[in-house]
Every structure is written in C-alpha cells, then in structure tokens.
Amino acid sequence: MSLTADVKAELVAVRDPRPTARVAELTSLLRFSGGLHSIANRVAVEAELDSDVLARRVARELMELYGVRPELAHVQSSAGRAGGHVAVRVIEGGETLARQTGLLDQRRRPVRGLPNKLTTGNREDLSAVWRGAFLASGSLSEPGRSASLEVACPSSEAAMALVGAAHRLSIPAKAREVRGIPRVVVREGEAIRLTLAHMGATKAAADWDQMRQRREVRAGVNRLVNFDDANLRRSAQAAVAACARVERALEILGDEVPDHLRQAGELRLSHRDASLDELGHHADPPMTKDAVAGRIRRLLAMADKKAESEGIPGTESAVPAGVDD
Image (cartoon, rainbow, N blue to C red; front, side, top):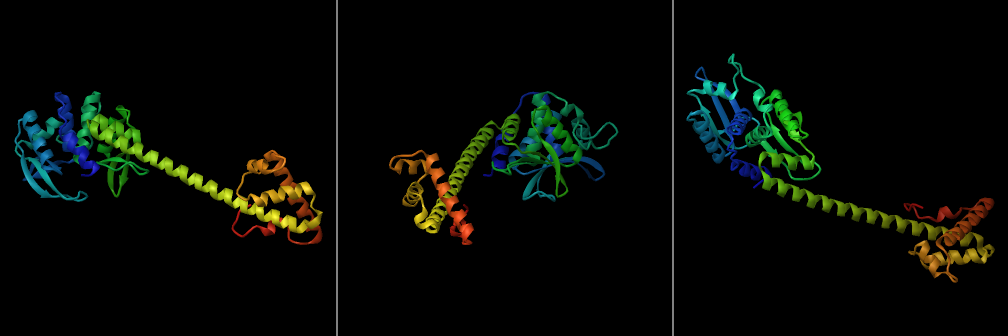
C-alpha cells in the first residue's frame, strides 16, 4: 500500500464520539469530495470517494446524524482524480441536508468555503475538519527534499478555510494552485508529523517520522562521506603539486641549495603522502610542522627567484595540468 492509502486506512477507523466532531468531519468530507449537484432540478449532495469502506462509513454517518439514507454507486472518476470511485448520493432531502451541514446558506446559495462554525470550533473539531478533508482528497509523499502532505480543494475559498483551521492547530500550511487546482500543502517534516497526529493517524505519524529520521541520518552519512572524499582528493592534489614544485626547485637550484633546505625538500619527496606534522617526525633531528613548512616555502621562493632572473619556468610550471596547488 502507498503512504496515502495507509494513512486513509487508519483514519477511516478513527471514531470521535463527540457529535460536533462527527459533524465537522462529515461536512468537511462532503465539501472536499464533491459537494452539491443539481439532479432533476433538485439539490443533491454527493460525495465521490475512493474506497467502499469509506463510502459505507459516510453513508452510516449520514443516517445516524441526519436520518437520511443515501444511494451508493460505483462511478468513473471525475477529471483530476485517478481510478474508479464510489459515489454516495442524497437526492431525496438533499437540500435539507445541504442546509443542515452548511453547504447551502440561508438564501440557498452554495457555500464556497467551509461553514464558519467549523473553522472557528475547538481543536477537536478542527482536527476533524482536517481528517475529513484528507479522507476526501488528501495525499502524502515519502520523506525527502520534496516531502509534502497535500489536500486538493474544490475552490480557493475552501483552501483558505482549511489553511485557517491548520493555523489554529499551529500547523504551517499554505494554499497554492497547481495546474488550476487549489491545494493546501504542508511541507516541513515535523509539521507533517504533527498534522498526521492531529488527524488521528498516530501510527502513520510515528512510522513517517521514523522513516524521515532514518533518511536524514543516511543523508548525513552520505554528506560526511562526500566531504571526506573531497578532503582526500584535495589532500592528494596538494601533495602532488607540492612534490612537483620541490622537484623543480631542486633542479633549478642545483648545487646552490643550502643543506637545511635540501634536507626539507628531500624529506617531502621521500614521504609524498605524509602531512607536515608527520614530516617533522621523520626529520633528524625532529622538527615542528611549522619549521618544515617554512623551509619548503623558502626553498620554493629561492628557486622561483632564480628562475625569474634567468628567464626560465619556475616551480609552478612543474605542477601537472588539472591539479590545484
């Protein structure tokens, strides 16, 4: 199963016994899964859902809360929704139900967002609003750089209402439009976990967070490995460049090299991969790394000065192409 299916399977089993929370969830679910239609000049309430289990649950809630018996029918999905769906329709008494749920206002005008009483309710009702919206048209992607929890919305007003509910739950959700469809998106990892937990998908929240942490640790390890590889490459290039310059310096100076500088240069060439600190330990008598570095710098400077006066290539000319000094 996909992450989205796992979350919906868990949410379908959540039953908040509080009447206001049940109404909030059902109203949100109806709003985000279809809403109002006109059938035979009558107002009908229809929800287009992606599973039989969810459709049966919505039908049961409609009967228990509003005393209406809906029709269930398998339908081809509407534009923008993949696969087959189950339609839950209320035609007889549809207008009354639409008024009771707040999908129609007192002047029989469709409410484009969500009823105000839902988005200003308590935290449990706000969580129920999000649960209904996600069951209707939500999706969850895997943790990573583009991780997101999204809800496709029937209108920009519905998106803004859902964003407002999220902010009252301290969830940093944002509304945006993708290919002409308004969406509400939660992106930051901890915010996604918090949203799942608020909706009641506690297992999915824990599993998603564990997956996120494993990926972050793996990404951190990969960054460290890449960092170490880069350091090793730089160190190797620096050693190649240093040895090439020292060889060229000894060649330029010939017998004019002072003994202490020649010893430092030969020490560098004898231990090509050693650090300056290690070179100091190999010296006889031992030297500090600063002393070794100082002597090598003076050797190169002396050679470059002579090369310049004689008009010949200096020590830099010996560094192989593509190797950074």
